[in-house]
Amino acid sequence: MSQPSVIIATASYDYTIRFWEAQSASCYRAINCPAVPQRELDEGRNPQHVNKLEISPDKRYLAAACNPYIRLFDINSHHGHDQRMAPFVGHTSNVMAVGFHADGNSMYSGSEDGTVRIWDLRAPNRPEVYERNCLKAYHLDGSVTPINTVVLHPNQIELISGDQDGIIRVWDTRMNSCTIELVPEPDTAIRSLSVMRDGTMLAAANDGGTCFIWNILRESQVTTEFEPIHKLQAHDRQILKCVLSPDNKYLATASSDKTVKIWNVDSFTLDKVLTGHQRWVWDCAFSVDAKFILTASSDMTARLWSMEEGNELRVYRGHNKAIVCCALNDV
Image 1 (cartoon, helix red, strand yellow):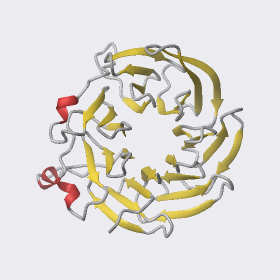
Image 2 (cartoon, helix red, strand yellow):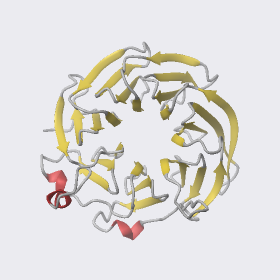
Image 3 (tube, helix red, strand yellow):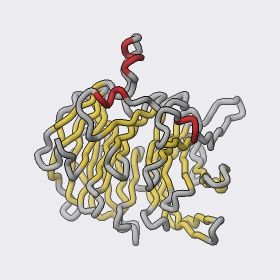
Image 4 (spheres, helix red, strand yellow):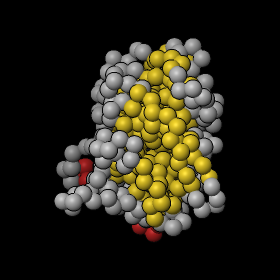
């Protein structure tokens, strides 16, 4: 089967990843028990759910952040072949974040084990060749602060992580060191981060329903400054995902209050509220032209919405437990 022009993928607590045809909303491929290698399943290990999905820039691979592995699946492979791809081993706890560098040669991740790592995709069977243990944030008792989210700045140099203690750290991958720490609300977990496509803005969402916004100022080739410009009380409950749109006009916030809110970035006023999900909305992703947004919910559905009208266009049904993450690539 030829590759669809629009790739939509979802992962659920039912231990499956599903691929969907965008227009018909039909599932054309399902991967069972994707989080655990077949050998470990054969040895009696229980299935695990997937925490995060990301599609590679060339639409060849789907990365799945699992516990404690990262799994990489060939989007164009036939059934069964994907299970033979080696897991990326190194994290020791839930992997909560995963993404690709623009050139597709490397992948980054963040985990509840307190580390941010970079992986060399040119040596998929030896990920330790290019593994960078960027973050070990310890409490006084020696425990590691879990990382909930990681994003890559468009400059492809700086990784930005957000953790359970409410600390945002900027990691310069050239110097392999933390260069900036931001603490917008101490002891309130940072749940999601998003960087504007042109690299000029950072949004951070926390468990208190607040979104913090910074302008990113590039003072020189080696110095980045973050200027706080807005504190947005977006929801009365947890924000589970925040995303800045590819056209740099909107901020989407998905919440445990069952809604997704769309905010104007120029004034941070509410543009519209997407209502229809019956339970928590865990994830959302914009189309490349920012005309559509995909959402994933505990109500076992993913939904595609019109950004112009704010109405629901498609509902993707097939999972039998909560959908916790989604990925969209229509480039």
